[in-house]
Each structure stands twice: as C-alpha cells, then as structure tokens.
Length: 185
Length: 121
Image (tube, rainbow over all chains, first blue to last red; front, side, top):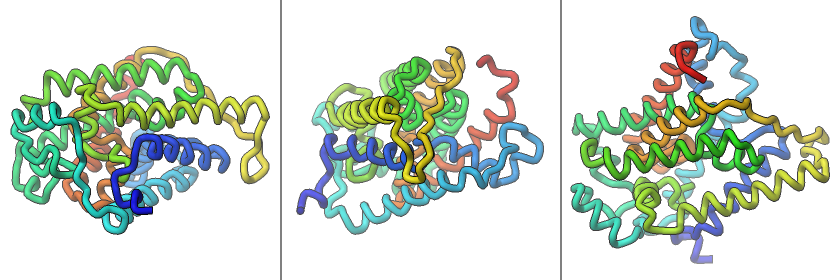
C-alpha cells in the first residue's frame, strides 16, 4: 500500500478522472469545472447588471461542492498522503527550466519561484500569475469549457466542437511554452 | 489531481515540451474510459442513481468561440500551469499564491461575461 504515498502513475490518475465523470453522470450531473468560475461571479453579485451571470446559482450548488471537494482532496493529498512531493520530470526539461532561472525544477511540486509565499513580494511573478489566471478564466468561458468540460467530457461524447477547443488549448499552450514564457517568467 | 501530479506546473511544462507520456497518459486513459462509459450509457440507456434517464446534452455547434477561446485558455494554462480543477486542489494543498490565479480567473470570467456580446462566437 506504500505506493499511495508516492506519485501516482498515469494509469491510476486517468481512470480516477473517468470515475469522477461517471459518478457525476450517474448523479444526473455533468463534469465541467470552469462553470464554477461563472457561479463564483454570480455569488459576488455580477448577476445584477450582466445577463450572463443572471441565473439561479443554487442550481449549481452541486458543482460548488465538487470544487470544495477538490480543495479538501488537495489538502488530504498533500498533508496525509505524500511523503515527498517532488515531481520528477525529464532531465532535459529540468535543464531547460534552469536556463529560464527556475532552479527548483526537479526538486519541488511547483516552481518555488512562482508559488512559494515569497512570490507575494515579487511584482513580476504576481503579474504573470494574474495574467495566467485571467487567460484561463476568460478563455474557458469563451470556449464554453476547460480541460474537464471539453477534453474529458466533450471528447468522451465525441463532440467535434470539443476537439476544436482541445486543439485550441494545445496551440495556446505550445505558443506560451515555446515562445512567450521566457519573457513572462 | 494532486497525487497524479496533474496539478504540477512542472508536469504541464513538460507536457508542452513533449518530454514525457505522463500527462498524455492521464488525459488519454480518462478519455478512453469516458468514451466507453458514455457509449455504454447511451446504448444500454442506463439510468442515474435516482432512476432518471441520463441525458448527455450535445454542445452548440460553431467554430469560432471554441477555437479562439481554446487558444486563450491554452495560453493561460501554459503560463500558470493550472486549469480550473487543479487551481482549487493546489489551494487545498497550501500553495497560497494560487489564490492570485483563482481570483484573476474569476475576474477573467467576469470580463468575458461583460463583453461577450461584442465577441464573435
């Protein structure tokens, strides 16, 4: 049972995502996380003057609960199920990241340069995180879904439009990864 | 999300560098099982835990919003290393700067809501 404390292989992680989708489908719901971002806007009062947010947020309580579950899951995973959170990525990738001044590559779960508490004192880091978040939020709603809604749920239903979205995700990700990151880190 | 490292910025970076099968394995295996599952549900007309028929609603057909929205999302995903699910997982795991990403993601959603009538869909 010790494998639980190690990083989980893809053939455990992937099927577990499918299990989550299955549980949601059999509960009469659907699997899509980014719609919660819209619900959060509504909870902050955005529905008052914008029709997009003017909907019955209570119908989405189940989805908010799922997000709460994800938060709790993250807490349990980090604090009870992990002895060493280091993510062992490919040596070539570690080398490339060190060139970009991300020296924590290969020795942490997330780059400390971006995600340790120290980041709160670095305006450039905060700006990059803010830009990243903004693009994810804006892009996900524009595309009508994120990786859960399109790459998993949409493609599982063999939706062509989800394929367009996923191709878009990849083009965007590749553009950022290969051309833009060096300027934004 | 956390234990499979799908929530790790490093894994997302590595994915876009095509240096490991790991992330493709996660998404691919989830998708393979998902396709099987939905086909089973549709063909055998399976019902939910509550006895209701399971309705899988098809998405609206168009091109622009999915592709352009997708690229914008992808740019953010490549930069922050997190899509919406992992954002919340990482919050639970204690990486507080992810709060910036979450708050701006909500804000990005808000801006979309405000200007969507002016955008091609």
